[in-house]
Image (cartoon, rainbow, N blue to C red; front, side, top):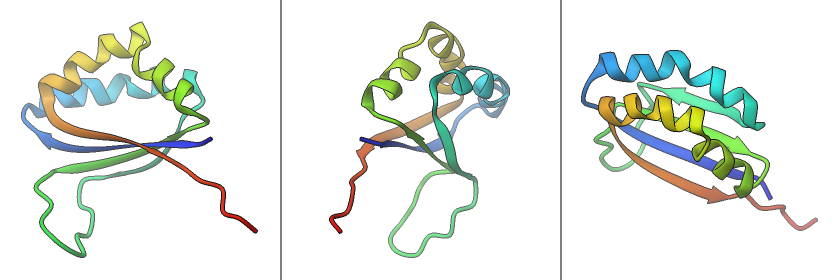
Length: 99
């Protein structure tokens, strides 16, 4: 079942985050993920949104996401992400609508 990883980021060190971002796709492309959205100015339609960026990715299943997020290559670059931004990350299960 497809899963979606949604990250809401509040920048704390832009240079560190930019280093992470520069290396991200080299790691990401190895794990069958798809980047669906990455927006630093999403339009807030309701409520407060105290973040600076939203990123949404999809993976074929939870195992693929966990392989990505626990891969040594990702753990290496993620040090710059955690140094560069506070994050709220959600893993959301997709569904197949009944026909």
